Image (tube, rainbow, N blue to C red; front, side):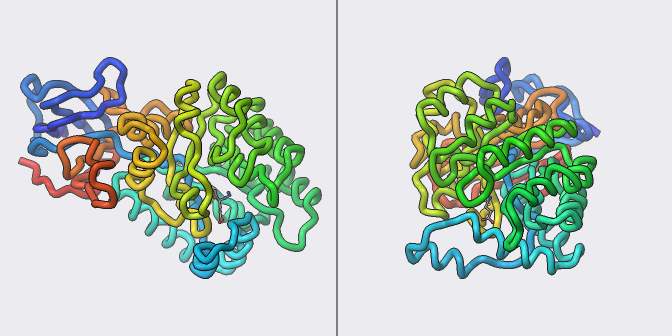
Amino acid sequence: MAVLITGIGELTTNDAELGKLRDAAVVVDGEKIAWVGAAADAPDSDERIDVEGRAVLPGWVDSHTHLVFAGDRTTEFEARMAGKAYSAGGIAVTVEATRAASDEQLAANLRRHVDEAAKQGTTCLETKTGYGLNVEDEVRSARIATDVADEVTFLGAHLVPPGADAESYVDLVCGDMLDAVAPLVRWADVFCETGAFDEAQSGRVLKAARERGLGLRVHGNQLGEGPGVRLAVELGAASVDHCTYLSEADVAALAASDTVATLLPACDLSTRQPLAPARRLLDAGATVALASNANPGSSYTTSMAFCVTTAVLQMRMTIEEAVWSATAGGARALRRDDVGVIRPGARADLQVLEAPSVTHLAYRPGVPLTAGVWRCGRALTSCFAAK
Ligand code: NIG
């Protein structure tokens, strides 16, 4: 069934040829976009939805979350707001709660957060394992994630579990754990950071994952400058995430590579770190994505709009750069070309704003502007009646 969405005041397509359109319309047929153009030229359709001058853009592509978890870290957050520094060690609190939770509890918690994100315009979401940290719980986390998320990443190398020997744990991750989880996931990630895994350990994990056919991602340069970005670029990772502390060599390496720099502003704010140097990356020619990093420790938000607002108001990205990075940039970080874009043949993932332009995402900070969301051609939330 073809549905015409018309009366679009401003249409952000992220397609190089289509660009940004005014007085536009989109035809959705089944799960895909079938047509994009001027409202006056729209073809016949089975149904018609008039969005009355509002802005339409691709659904957010949130390329970095950690949502297979149980438990709560409010106390840690309160301590941080009172001046305590963030450290990787807090992950262990969530590991304990996650191991103790049932499959049903983990699945319900994941579903609740994914639904929360979808209501705010997120239509494609990656999530990670990483709160299991033994073979059984990492496999369980991956299974639960694949039922709900668009993209799943193995993050067995998130933290050396308390009491374990680091080298023996890396052996386990590179051996039995990867053997068991690799068939369930598309990506592998490593937290290459002081307090987590060093360069040699991170390199071992990434190479073992690559040998099993997984795409690579890296958590790097979150708490200080370090080897994360260099390693990610050298090994051809799709994305290096955080990038809060970057040397000039890191920026140059990213600019000369296909590795996306994924920035996580909600995490930087929530851990009281400086905001990542978006302008330096963009001006050097690097590809930048924005993601929520939704997790119970360092960034407990599913709001991509908040990330876009922060990127514009505080990281000096233009609104166009921030919207692109939270949609097409996320798709690039996941090496996908079917999402984050509105063009014929793409997945019909789009959002309508309660505003005439995307500028309002920054102009009206904190105001919930999501008026309608379609994912795979299906209305998830909408205040518009079809006629
Ligand atoms: O991306 N950096 C590592 N992992 C998460 C933190 C997870 C946690 O603290 O529970 C992050 O910020």
